[in-house]
Image 1 (tube, one colour):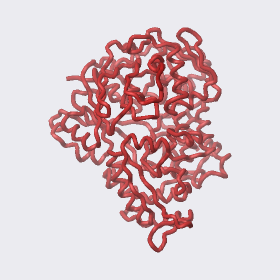
Image 2 (tube, rainbow, N blue to C red):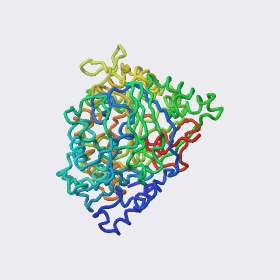
Image 3 (tube, helix red, strand yellow):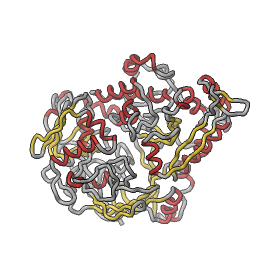
Image 4 (tube, rainbow, N blue to C red):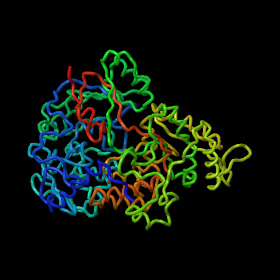
Length: 606
């Protein structure tokens, strides 16, 4: 049975009835679109409710990154792109409001049009839309951008392009995309494609890494670049869209700078000296213990906790099922048993962080641990019953450690599972299969992931107790990207964020097609007709309740698949920042989500 609708879910569902009464309200051009029902803001809205329309312009904000970068093209798989290029310098046809689950309002496009079945979408460009060099954004740029991103570069854009039967200009400022697949999210997905300037790439290899600056239409232009060390963005005083309601009160800093550091320790030292303007802390124990430096005591810097209502997503050690040692679900369950969550959490976070028990924890889409499937969820899963892993229908719950550092009951359960899967401990204390091959694997981590490395060290000691030989290999960010893009790893640290409107990104994360696509986000390598089917049902859903049903079915398949050794999640965001950096009193639904909150909504004030 679908869990009771929380206030958030009710907030999503109620407008749907209004949409039904409106008949074909979306069959003609409109100022915005929502995944379900109608967008919350009327055509004459002044600004997004989470923005301060009177925020002053000016000042500088300096942020930090670990690692380095070697390209200014963020749309390709080659190389590592500098942070901020896409959100700061490029625009999309529609802009998302992060105070709603999934609603878009006109940006480069003044209107969007689709039919009730969402078999097509049409956009009309604003007459004054301009690139930063003053040239107009044209229909030709739009069509070229969609086809190029859909066929070259990073595969995250390719799936949607394959669902387009026809892309055409239907007027001097109008483009239309006709679909060959039922996917009600497609009009919104296409509304969020970055628009590139076609002439920037004439005679060039689109997929080659380059430090050439691309021409966008966004609020900032790249000012200074020190490859791998620093990138600075300067607010464009001639930005064509600065007075649009969807932009009012946003992008207020004159300068945004990212400094790159080799490790988090160096970053924190720079925070203490004031070299970094704002810093996101992701560890509750450190938040409680190490923020006592002089700048905080004097009021020069302040601490801020930002609540949010978004799902936990999944964070933890992902097992690559393409590797033979992780192909058996019983082995994967044993790996989760051997992760003594209570002990690790207490050691690393002080025990303050909540455990991830679901891919959609902290949301209406989460499956309740141990509860059997029923209703619409059961109906979606029953056709695949013969192939479902134990716990999918009956209910799956993470194994619980006994609260001690040794966790001996967990060790015994893990050994029993491993033995069932054909792995036994020999006289030499080494876990081996029937062929005598030792159970050994590598955990790949990125240099600078010190907290994760601490977790891995504790985990490896537990693995030794059952004869497993695991080791950690630290790579720089470029090497890590190359290894994970080609799925050349046994186990690694993975973060997959979830939204309050799950959709096409789920195909990139978990679909069978993505499992064989290098550069995709399906690191675990799962291939499941059931997962493919429930993602399709999610994309075809006409109501938030139907989408939630599909999301809960997907959650069951993923949790019972035992693909990830889950960690913990943050139910609020933690930021320390200079006192002269100000933010709106209202916190948007998604909280501090990517750049949509910090720095987009913040401003400088002496």
